[in-house]
Length: 135
Image (cartoon, rainbow, N blue to C red; front, side, top):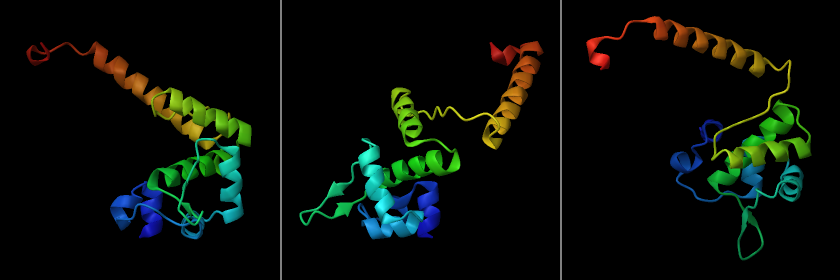
């Protein structure tokens, strides 16, 4: 259940917890703790809170950022620098995901198919006569 909540980005709602230790995050996301430490240095937007003992306390939004970083690096094949640039693009677009997907990626093909279908629907709708209810 916790792993499903991580995938859905609903950790706080699922567990009621505000913070997770690095060990818990490592286990939930299947990312080694030394990798998480490295990503903190490589990605300025990833800054987990540290408690009085100096232990990292990851919040739900930190988990979302880690999942995005993991997707960019391991799913899309970006370099650290490329992933950092994509995250900056995301921030500049008011939180709307604007990934520059690499050609040949199945996600790109799917997005192209969806865009083609949407364009076709828009053309069909624009040809329809307007009804009295459309005003």
